[in-house]
Image (cartoon, rainbow, N blue to C red; front, side, top):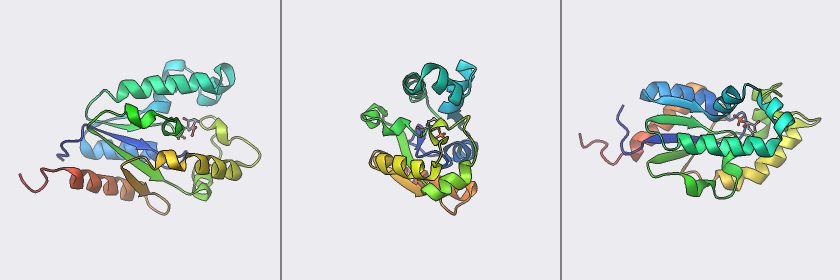
Length: 181
Ligand code: S3P
């Protein structure tokens, strides 16, 4: 599928919004590589995210997340699944290079809890006595940041397939050469 002039797709959004599952599927459809930033960090560290948070602190994790995402944003023909906190840091959208299509996968807090269930290894931020309330608070804090993405795709009630098809449609509609070849 030709989707010029996009060189890469950056998926942002909250934990459990489907960035990794949708990103993998979309990359497969496009014939592009898939990069999961959380996975790259845990692979290099040889530790789970919860262990990194515990041993080195959240601020260390955020530095690694920033570094890895910046590296991958220099690459072409790649679908990138950011961690849910990446886009929430002020200034992040200024670092996104041209040729990047940014998509916010939105999700309700109730759906987050249904989807992520018990995953404290990956999501220490939701490992607390009231994860639903925490998800609501964090989503409220982060929504303005997420809304800076060029496109918003709702994921509640949609399958991974539905969401990746929707993103493919956005990419095709974005292509100024569409219909001219
Ligand atoms: C985080 C989201 C997680 C992971 C870490 C922090 C966040 O990634 O990076 O637990 O701050 O929202 P996912 O969004 O892939 O769950």
